[in-house]
Length: 429
Image (cartoon, rainbow, N blue to C red; front, side, top):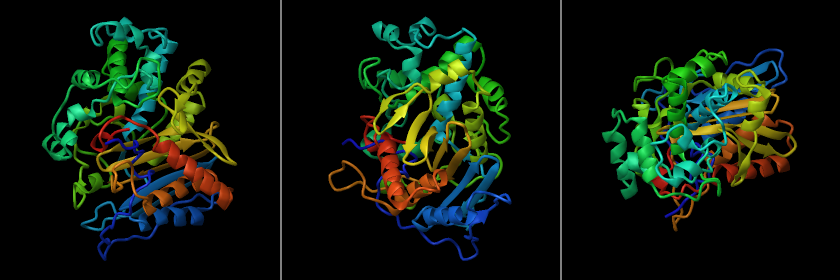
């Protein structure tokens, strides 16, 4: 069975998940903190964000910027049992938004002359990919997902191939080495010849982490923390060593298309399985600050940034080096990434000048239901509400017609990736 890749698995078409009402003591009023005066319409943003919770999402929180004006909001519950409300500024596992951090680190090494984007990976890691394959796959192909290397997720969580989520619980506290993740991905069926086409694979960014370790002589998470996270001025972003999240955060509920019923909390998890492909923790404010710093030339120079923003076709969008672009009719192009891990979804998008930005995180995943023939998902009000919020946060002046066009484009772009895996493997992106 083949299904589309899910982005946050909340921006795809799906069937509404019936959500238990929060406890009577829960504060489910929108928590907002707009600056004053502001050009941002906080009331409209609050209503749109609240609609995502009203459609069935447990909790959602977001930060929006327009120049120096900021708005933050949160709606729903961080803990469905106690009714504890979500708040702006909560820490979030951001999944594959981590790939932008990793790509920045690699491009910094390109600027130092230690890495060439068009050199074969075998020049740096000669024993990792044997034979001609290692000579054909370049660093650029890893970063823009045209390497043809398969994904390691099914190998890392083998029960998923049988339609069971047992591996998720059995391996909650497992530590898995990045070399093993790379081996599993390289052993998976290739998705094409090197350079032939775009096909999203987390293995590419595990190998990018191994490359960073080789050329810097440092743990890549430590290097990224010092030279990317700190350089961007991010105060609440980290690569946690512990399975436990520190600081205020929501519980992370995984439904896995109905296999886990009721949805189970996966906020405590050893994230070594995601490594440099998806283990960063951040906040929505920090994500906006990060992409603003990147697009403003504070993390890499103009030549390296130009390379990052050089794209290849990727379904309904275009993909650069660890960053993609989406076009919103009437408001132009926005750059960023999305992310998903067990129980948490995130998206962050910025205008090229970093002036208009939205970042959002939510805490219920894979609530979708497959359609009768298993080729996709039934439509979901959650998806419609989330798409609408993201587009209107980026382009508040859009007309109803252009908003519909933009949300359709967004959904098509964010569900168009074919991992050539079973649906149980589309869990990290």
